[in-house]
Length: 206
Image (cartoon, rainbow, N blue to C red; front, side, top):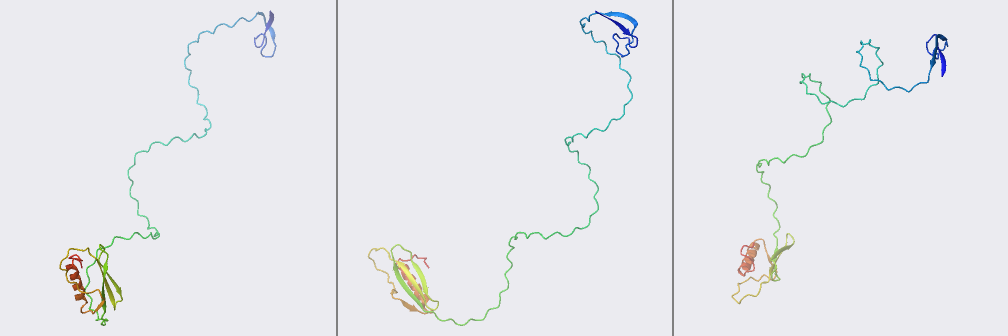
């Protein structure tokens, strides 16, 4: 057990103010500190005190992050039409567009004047030849030679042997012959008629 005196300045024992004015308040005996008692119940909340004076405005804090974009508002009313601006400079020429559709055919023009009669051409000498083709092949006509001396070669396919009957007369044209422009049409027509009569050409063959 220790014996202390109270400080005459701060009233604590031992002194807590540093003056050490102990002894003016008498002496008391400080015993051994007992255990801490249980915490008492919380008292009732006291009444709210008056509002204090407004403090000075603090410094402006740093700018916060940009928030998300809000929804688009309703379209406002159309404003008045402004005055017409000055005409701008002419822009560069654009690319050539695609060709348009062909227009309708125009009316037939007037008939032109008749041209002069050309000189008389030379009379051609036509040679007609007839050859026998294989059975079942097509009949052909081939023109060779020149414009002045054409050669017409008729190839007639050989027919199958038929029953014995009176054969139609066929002009003898196996040997090359010549014809002038005045009788070549009659010669060819007679040859074709004979071939049709013999059944070597269809009736409508030309």
